[in-house]
Length: 106
Image (cartoon, one colour):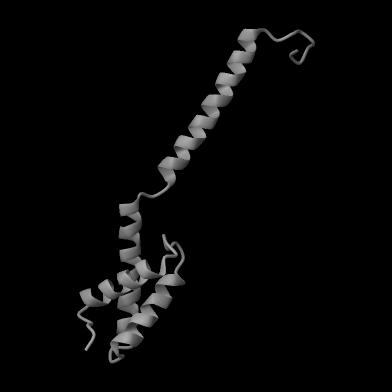
């Protein structure tokens, strides 16, 4: 029955189901489109690590490699919007960013 006491027809029920299905499908597609792809996450992580490495290297230009790496990893892990919690990925990004700045282990 609809809101005024008239029984709903099969066609009405089918329309409601199709409308609900379209809404659910649209929501699912929108969510999939908003989630960043793996390569986008990698680029974002590299950018965050590069910025963190630049900041740390400028603050502590004479620090040893292990200390620099540890400080950059901490800065990246604590940054807002980091696309991963994978510690190994963060360490690789930090080491790569330091290497790009010319900071290498001795």
